[in-house]
Length: 323
Image 1 (cartoon, helix red, strand yellow):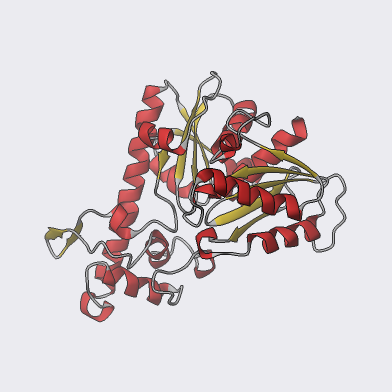
Image 2 (cartoon, rainbow, N blue to C red):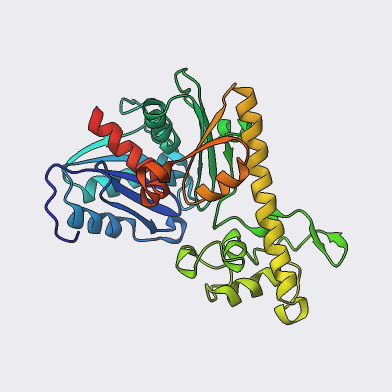
């Protein structure tokens, strides 16, 4: 798509703390870039590159990166991210807040990507529990015919509609308060020795190219590297623990994560009298397994895997198209 003229293109952007995602309203383009803002990732340069390649007529934006701790406050984070977007795209811009494209306070834009997805799903599918699992977090949004309420990350955490567990970046200690090995149950190290990506890579659920974040030890993003990191979570070397021991830790972490998501799904379905789950994101398959026995629609089956993995960017582009 390099150099493509797209005068009528609407491009959606979802700018997060770890990843910036982009998708066109027609679904022909979808891309996710690992840009850890807290490490000074070149957001402006990445946006400049997108602008040059895609040449959109209009850009619709949702923001979640304002929470990155490189910013002293959410308000400052929103301000600096918007400055980068406005400098990169000399075209019409639409910014989505909790209640849509109409907003008065920039803080309404903070962490509003779930709202764009939910508004789009409400129109396309209707009542459901929309679950989107990314590299870092899992959103669980009840859609039940009522207006979607404005809700901050704090409020959503308190209601169980935001769980800080993701397919790649979640630390193993956050998933496993206890490890079972050699007939003993004990707490692992709380050091950031391994992450969820190591567990999924070790068991073959993702390929090395899917490990699209930093490894805790900055080491190899291959199966051997993952097994070494998993071994360290119980203060062992791989030679000491053995491959089967490391794989056992991986399986326990994956099972625990699925249990966390399943419990949240069941509780929210019951609380909101809903009968269907709609799954999206990098962890779409994890959601599907967690929702075993529950009617579950996969976004990838309608829109494709690439769109599923950048769904808020696609949703906000489609909402701009209809505005």
